Amino acid sequence: MIPRYSRPIMTSIWAPENRYRIWFEIEALACEAMAKYDFIPKESAKAIREQGDKAMASFNAQDVTAIDDIEAKVRHDVIAFLTWLAGKIGEDSRFVHMGMTSSDVLDTCLAVQLTQAADILLEDIDKVLEAIKKQAFEHKYTLTIGRSHGIHAEPVTFGLKLAGYYAEFARNKNRLLQARQEIATCAISGAVGTYAHIDPRIETYVAEHLGLSAEPVSTQVIPRDRHAAFFATLGVIASSIERLSIEIRHLQRSEVREAEEFFHPDQKGSSAMPHKRNPILTENLTGLARIVRSHVVPAMENVALWHERDISHSSVERMICPDGTITLDFALNRLAGVMEKLVVYPERMQENIESLGGVVHSGEVLLALARAGLSREQSYRIVQRSAMETWTKLGKPEGKSFRENLENDPEITGRIDASVLDKAMDGSMHVQNLDHIYQNVFGETGPKSKN
Image 1 (tube, rainbow, N blue to C red):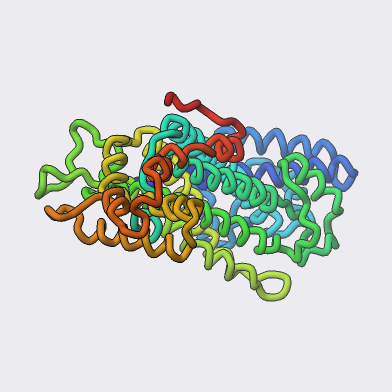
Image 2: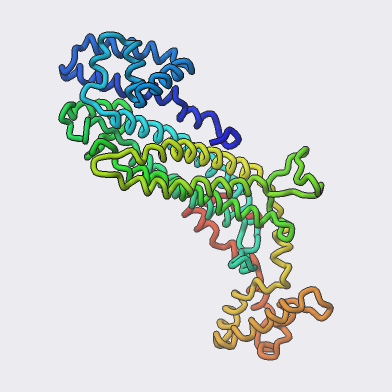
């Protein structure tokens, strides 16, 4: 991924220096295990560890270049590394990689890298959750208009809107925890996964020391359904980022103006129109979400490998593993920043609720008329008639409010007390069950209403 959308903490996971250090750790642990079970001399395992640790401690870009130069000749990345390592270790290097195959190193290393990436992504989600929760508690009772099909529906609160996003990202955290567990898998089983040349206890030892689980059946490669599930989870998280981003973009539209991204004092919105305040961060997040989701299909297609293995998945993973995790890491951190600094306009929200002359209360008025003795069909006809009369004449001299049109309707004049309409058009009913929802979402009710 390009530096513009990358954070060093995540890119370092995919740097060759980190990859080669993990490769050595896998080989050294395997040697220690082989020595433990008397397959190789203990002195040799000790020398491999000491000399290898020394070499990896000073490992730098020159060493990467040296390995690349070897690979240019042998045309095999693991052999190139083992050749370089042998030059650092000496005679005891003959015991390195004994009974193993390249995929034992490559797949186990990828598992370590993906778990490292997942741990960072989990921290990122926690930042998003914290930022959303803070805004949700601050605006628990901030009335705003709910919309269905993009059209005014009934009042909700801005805090309630955000509670829904919090619950979604909480689910995403659980999904990622599950995906991390599934991807944290080690395979040290040798050619075609039969353990013909290496004892299964070696795999168990390496897995335990790397914090991984041993793959039950590793046909020479770790089955790619695990990786597909991992990237599918990243795709779902990306979609949640986009959903919240689109909400903010809509709320920032000039005609709505209920909330907006923080606009820095020296920020410029347009090279041609100085007045512009554009939702550039959430638009960017929408785009980045598309990139992350685009990696899901290749990951799915990687599942179907030939027989015990092929490497059609390799080139795909060299791209999607760094790019997918780096992009999502950047996007989650950007989203957390947007939510931390989100500017909310409660007064404008109230104006929008009232902008249609009160028709947003039609649902409760319908129920109120039915409770008062009118049939549901009659009630619906009366309410819709008054609402359409209000809607079509908004802003015109002859236009009347929804309440006025209801009171002038001959079917309810003198039949419905004014107090019934007062109660039906009281916005407080839309906050009366917030504690129940907040308890479900946050495990606590949060602030109490000041009213």
